[in-house]
Length: 123
Image 1 (cartoon, helix red, strand yellow):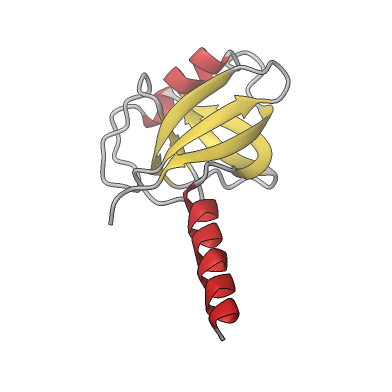
Image 2 (cartoon, rainbow, N blue to C red):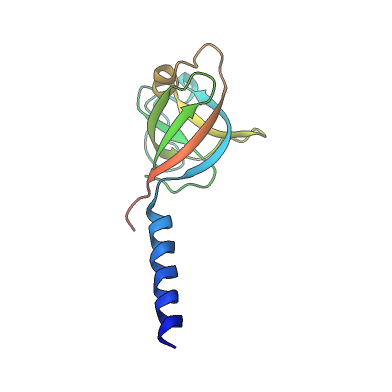
């Protein structure tokens, strides 16, 4: 019986460890949006600032901090989720103009990416 309890405790600790590790959350296409939304309210209720380091995601909670890696160039940016979208098949994140500029994708518009959740908001 003691062996089973010990195994169960180890399994629980391992699962807690995994839940707190940064891991690739998603791969897909990153796009960006800018002037057409600048100054307007987004899904979180915030006013969109196209120069901010923010992004839209379909399911991640508002306030989540994620790293977006451009799989073509290897460049990375860290953004805060404050909006919902994108709503085009295959796209997984819609970056603010500022984030897209820092990532270097303004001209090409989209890029294959990998999203890693760095921090989920406190409840």
